[in-house]
Amino acid sequence: MSKEMRFDKRIVIVTGGGRGIGRAHALLLGARGAHVVVNDLGTTTVDGTGEATQSPAIQVADEIRLAGGTAIANFDDVSTEAGAANLIDQTIDTYGKIDILVNNAGIQASPPFGDGTSEAFDRMMRQHAYGHYFVTRAAWPHMMSVGYGRVVNTTSGAALYGLPQSSHYCMAKGAIIGMTKALALEGAAAGIKVNAVAPAAYTRMVTGMKDEDLRQQMEALMPPHFVAPMVAWLAHEACSVSGEIFDVGAGRAARVFFAEGPGYCSRSLSIEEVNEHFETICDESAYMVFKTGMESAEKMSEIAGAAMRQ
Image (cartoon, rainbow, N blue to C red; front, top):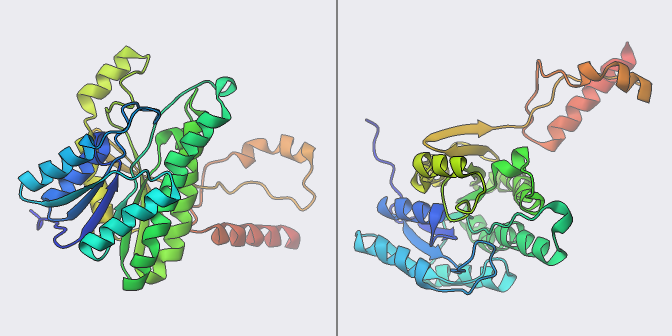
């Protein structure tokens, strides 16, 4: 049996930590010795429009303390620049540093694409993409100054693979993937690792789904606490990766990666050639996985150069 992985004296922020998946993250990290800042606006509806209440964040912080841990509650709205700044300021004022940021806060609404409003789209982007951005940007200088940090973002399988009647949600979660990849490269020299999870769990976000059989299956097989161990490992000092995405749920964790096939290259590429060689263009054999956009560009240049010499 390997030695227990602890977070003693580590300062952790969990946004959206008052319910569901975020609550599971906060409780596990608190049980392993972390000092946890439980952030939750406490809206009463999953689309973020309901009345805010402080009780979810307070209850989780109390639960951590009753179990012998250390925690405080925070009620700021991380979808605003001011709210994110207040969250970071409270953390620094209380504990003096930030070691780990778990960006988890989010909302859910699923109108058909043609029925969505600009207001609903803006609210979705603000809660997910802007929320991740604002809090991470406010925490970043503190991590940079000490040469250490762990950021765990929350994307979604919906963004990776698509989901009907969820275009706003998919776009907001997709932005988080790009942010994760870029910040992993920016933070590498400073000892900051940035990764993401695409969680699958039964929470109030999915209780209203129309597929009753799937809802019951998720309730039985996908409790939120099954997501937390992967997140905790990514938040630990032992984490050895950055810029990665992991699909997590029901006790399963798997790396998600983007790949390119060898493709087809012609220096006289035409519409007709695309049509003629489309099967080769879509060939998945001998695929390549790149760590950066530059690596992809370098490989494309290499292939093009070889084609010119033929």
